[in-house]
Each structure stands twice: as structure tokens, then as C-alpha cells.
Length: 275
Image 1 (tube, helix red, strand yellow):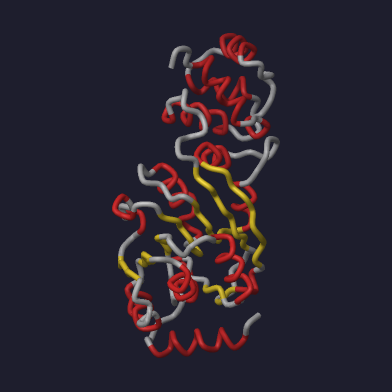
Image 2: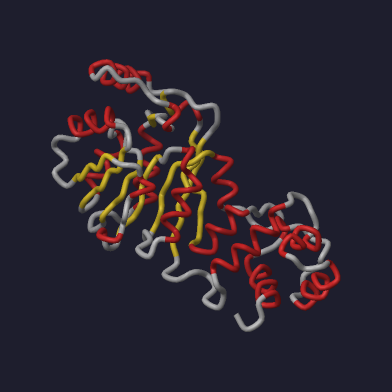
């Protein structure tokens, strides 16, 4: 633990009469080596626009402003915005916006990357929002809960709705684990750095995303249920489902977490022929 950095953070917060709001996911990274890992995973940055979500006290922001062409920092907490504008006064390529990232429109950014220690309570929403945007980022290098990182990068037998959703739009990689002691205040769980390289177009060009995810959601809707049972929620009787799954080459007794994305596509093509 970087005691010196924690002391600086406490002094800075005290100066502004502020304190970390853990309800907003404010856990500040205080170990330099993990900042180095994030920056390294995001390279190259010298000609890039970077979007940072939840910059907090600007520890990562200052590093990004030295590396990138320009940095957009989106912060919902007005107290943190005041601190950020002060500590990043010399960052002439920094644009700070006080707003909820859920309302942010990235279309004017052009090509960009997301590099951020994101608020954990918004993790799934942020990932889904930006992967589904018309102007999606080239890459997301994000710090998330370790358990969530493992779900994002999961392989068949451990798949989830989240892993299917991410891997439909991009290729994820677990860069490294960050222990809970590397943050102030200390969260209850360990974290991990994840890098998602987005595809120019979704993994499958011959499926309708809305229908595809309606199917996948039904498959995961009843945890641990066999596919023939979980997919019956879509209005099919079990005999028809047995036939459709057999045509797709998928055993009807399997569970959703065992399926690859390619197998979901085969099921989709039999559920929605000609789609």
C-alpha cells in the first residue's frame, strides 16, 4: 500500500471538504505500478482521443494527458470536478464534463479509446452502452471487479449473459489482477484490468442483435436449467425445441453457460430461419 499517496489524497479531500463517496464507486487507485499497467495496456496513445469515466482525483487523468492527444473526463460528482480542474490545471489537452456518463454522446469524438477505473455499480451499463454505440471505442481498457473481469473473459462452461454480450462486439483480455489494498478507500473485493478490442462490426453479420440477445437472455433466464426448459419461455413447446436444437447440433440437455457464441448462432439460425 502506498501510504504516502493515501496521505496526499486525504489532504486533498480535506482541503475541499470532500470525502470519497463509495455509493458512486469512488475507490482511488494509489499504487503506481497498476497505473503503469493500465497505461501500457492502452498504448499507443500519442495520437488518440481518450475517454475517461469517473476520473475522481485525476491520478490516472494526469498520466493520460501526458500520453494522449486529448482526454475527455466525464465526472458526475461536482466536488470531484472542482478538485480535478485544480490538480489538472496544466493539462491543456483535457476536457472535463460534469455529467452522468449514461447521458454522454460519443459521436463527436471520432476514433477514441476508453481508459478508466470505472464506477463498479455502472460496469455492465457502461460496457453495454459503449459496445452498442454507433461510434464505439476502438478499445476499452477498464478497471473492474475481478469477478466481473473473469465473467467478461469467460470460455464455454463458464459463460454468462455478460460474456456473450461482450464477446459479440469485441475480444476481451484479462491484463492483470489489482489487489483491494491498492485502493483508497479499500473496497471489499479485488479488481482486474480488462482490455476489450472492439470489432468494426458485430461478430456475426447474419443475425439481428435484438433477436439474438432475446434468445440468449431466455437461455440464461433460468440458471442451471437445461436449454430445452429455459428456452421454453419463448413460447415453444418442448417437442419443437428438441427438434430445433437437434437441427442446430446442440444437445437439448446442455445448459446455457456451456455454449460458445458459434453455437448460439446455430441455434438462432434454426429459431429464426431466413432472418
